[in-house]
Amino acid sequence: MTEIEIGRGKRARTGYGFDDISIVPSRRTRDSDLVSLQWQIDAFKFDIPVIGAPTDSVMSPATAIALGRAGGLGVLNLEGVWTRYDDPEPLLAEIAGLPADLATSRMREIYAEPIKPELIRDRLAQVRDAGVVVSGSLSPQAVQEHYETVLAAGVDLMVIRGATVSAEHVSADASAPLNLKQFIYELDVPVVVGGVVTYTAALHLMRTGAAGVLVGFGGGAASTSEKVLGVAAPMATAVSDVAAARRDYLDESGGRYVHVIADGSLGTSGQVVKSLACGADAVMLGTALARATDAPGRGWHWGPEAHNQKLPRGNRVQVDQVGPLDVVLNGPSPVADGTANIMGALRKAMSTTGYKDLKEFQRIDVVVEANPPR
Image (cartoon, rainbow, N blue to C red; front, side, top):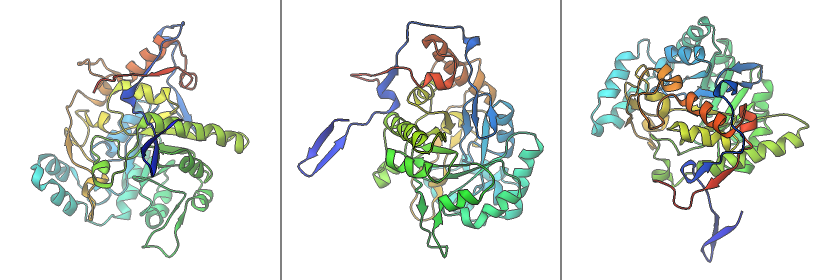
């Protein structure tokens, strides 16, 4: 890719977000009924390529179960209020009702409560008893302390999710750094790790044995990482770069396929469509699912960065509720802005452009818009 000169001492690539590109119809179309949205990672098959982001505003045991029954995967935040409190519902209601000037300080107090191993077991057991795939998320800093409890609870798929994750995370709280390759090798369950936004970082994570890689940081509606840290990445370019790493690692490893999961800047169905067109196998949705009337955030969305004890890098943001989870995913949509019937929109986009499944859809042509709408 051509570099541009920032100044005599710095050059940079041009990066594109999802709003900078559009997909291009081909000469063929097909009926929507002939389009498959199925996705499989490891031994687990899903009817839709949707993963619920592990934030307390999006995923509770109940919504993880509901998403699982809808054909997707719900991931519980194992460092959230559901593993800190026996009954977090009053606290979730309180967070939703906090005035803006008190939100960060009060959320810090709420999330200062210690994580209770017995609650990790109970929440994961609740999901397992419902007969859906069980998944939970830990940050790199918390993995070594809690992973044995998570595995003992019978998790099917483990997620290690942070603002950015490297192949080796150095922690001041542990006697040795978290070596992801060794850690994943010793586990009997598939692991999804992230986020990353570059080809090289993704290739390193793929070499650890991860089943999937999350792409993105600083791109979500509730994140202020760009303002606080100066860290962000245009997601269309990031997903495409990581998809290229997947292709090269497939050759390097002799056929091992690592799934690319877009995680960020996916607030509308059009952005979901474009992420898959850029090479993602599935999407992790936060804001989009927080708009459900049955989401635990009650019309608000926040991530773990919003209550960081030392340096908050996110806000609690209000989102427009559009209907129950099933309406958000499958419609019928009460609005025409891409916030509901997301899977219906994906199916329509694929049928309009003539593609029958997600893997085939990754080959679609895209164009860069000279003056994209903002």
